[in-house]
Image 1 (cartoon, rainbow, N blue to C red):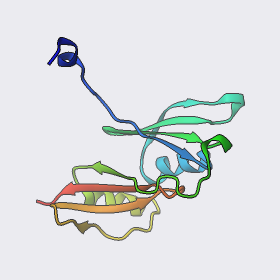
Image 2: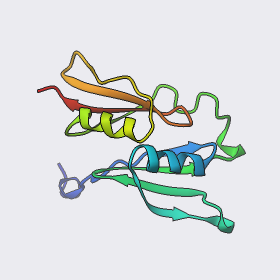
Image 3: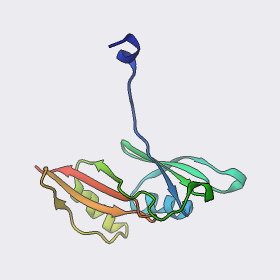
Length: 131
């Protein structure tokens, strides 16, 4: 191992999601999932990009444009897993915030999970270890 690689630390992964209507998507993440908008870029006074954070998780949204390709199939084959302390508490919070969700289910690998689809069809899984 070289000296350079001994000090190289990866600190965070923040996915960038291209969305059809950034205002709708940003509102969904804030109002339904409890994320906080911490940064934004507003070219010509219109939201074009933002960063949303909740606890130790973050993601970015960007308004899709023609050069980003068709929306159909965007995010296909990708699911974002958010590890949390208590999926039952999140289920209660999310349903209280207006989401119609299936109750948590237990995966064979020891995680209790709820699945949420965002307005653009990105799949989100919130999970906690089964005790």
